[in-house]
Amino acid sequence: MPARLFSALSRWGLEQLHRRLGSVPLRVSLNGVEKQFSDAPPVAKLEISGLGKLLALARAPELTFGDGYSDGSIRLEGDLLAALEAVYHSLQRRRRGWRTTLEDALLRMTQRNTEDGSRRNIHHHYDLRTDFYQLWLDRELLYTCAYFPTPETGLEDAQTAKMDHVARKLKLRPGEKVVEAGSGWGSLALHMARNYGVKVRAYNVSHEQIAYAQRRARLLGLSERVEFVEDDYRNIEAGYDVFVSVGMLEHVGLANYDEFGRVIRRAVGEVGRGLLHFIGRNRPAPLSVWIRKRIFPGAYPPTLKEMMDILEPANYAVLDVENLRLHYAKTLEHWLERFERNRERVESMFDEKFARAWRLYLTGSLAAFRVGTLQLFQVVFAGPECNAIPWTRAHVYDAASVATQPQEALIEQWTAAT
Image (cartoon, rainbow, N blue to C red):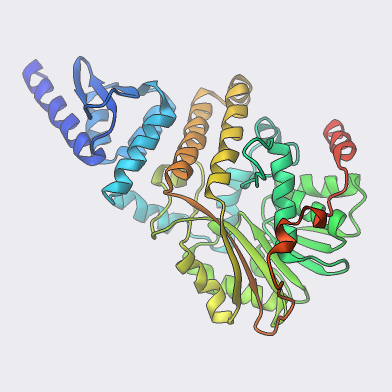
């Protein structure tokens, strides 16, 4: 290609990218052709490997950057977190997205959360090696937002505080039957049974997580009080007092909210109560195309209005709504720091491309919660005939009501055994 034509196309591509992203403190270069997107000092510099990559980046910035950063064809020098925060701020101010419409439509079609589709989607993300997650999650393997009583609280204590926060909001009473939709590696179910005297049946379609949780229940002597079932939430039956779902609603999909509501109604009836803990948004928008394609297939973060399509048809009353957005940002700070500390081990388990993709995923998630493009909601609800409603919120924040027993010895025993 003639040098003048190459230079003209490069400058045109850089200008198109600038228009898509807005005024952000970035410098972007391609073989000597360079453009700064803001008068402010750049927080990062992007070096693009070729003209085709630049034109693709201008057309579909999110997907192209995600793949290019992962495979090294787009190199970033500087602060990745600051760069992503600046871009998210710019897009939010301009109320513009950067998703690829065709790609978004294809993902909606191919990643639908039917029973078979949910298994495929969950398998893609959660059935990675458990020892991978052990590198950067807390000892209890809680892969959801922690609750930090103070900003200085450590991750292990904050995750235990989150489990108590959930249990106290539900006002669990000894002998009650609890059903959990989406159990992760089992920590919340075991915690509720051990510290609040309830019986728990937990559903999950991740084979890796269920097998781990079942082994853990046996080791802790809780198999008689906690049952982990490898099955879809749609097959939850009746007969429970409490329904709880932490970090699972994002995988249900809007098209299934009516059925999800019927499942809750069947499970806890007119007098039951429950809690939904989920990543959400202030305005309706799909999750990142790149994250859905490479990391989290089938995921969707609903608004509170969209979430009500679950509760309203069942005539359920909303008792409490809390937004823990900055708690999730703090959680991700801990996860990202631990991930970076174990980066070489991640690469040895998988490869450099995988490690770079997950670094981008965790960093981008942290940026989204800091900027506010993602929220973290906890919603407590009750059936129309439920009068077991707290008079105040004192039960949630009264430290004397915390029922947690010392767990250090059991955690160390479990860690050694695995």
